[in-house]
Image (cartoon, rainbow, N blue to C red):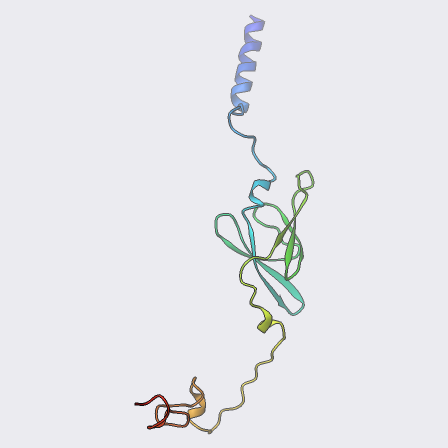
Length: 151
C-alpha cells in the first residue's frame, strides 16, 4: 500500500513538472543562434554620444547606445563607425560578438561637421529662391536661338 502511494506521488510529480520533448533541441537561453541574423546598419554620433542602428532577425529596427540591453538580453559594448561589440550572458558561448557595419558606405560627404546657416532673406531677388539657381526658361543661362545643336 505504501509502495502504491509512493508510485502515485512520483507519477504526479513527474506529470506536474513536465518532461522535455527529447526530439526537440534544448531551449537556447542565450539566444546565440540569433547572433548571425542581426545586422549593424548605421552609425550616428551626436554631441559625443555614439548610437548604432540595428536590425534584428525579424526586420525590426533598433537604435541603441553603449550599455543598452537588447530584447535578447545582450548588452551593447563599444560602438564605432565600423563595428559594434555585443556581450551575451556570462555563461553563454560566445561571451562577446562583433558586427561590422553593412549597407551603403557613402559617408565622405558627412565626415565634416557642417554648420548650416540661413541668412536672413529680407528682400532680395525672387529668383534666388529657386532650386535650379534662378534659371528660368528664356532667362539667364537658357539656350539662345541659333545656338549649336539647332537645325
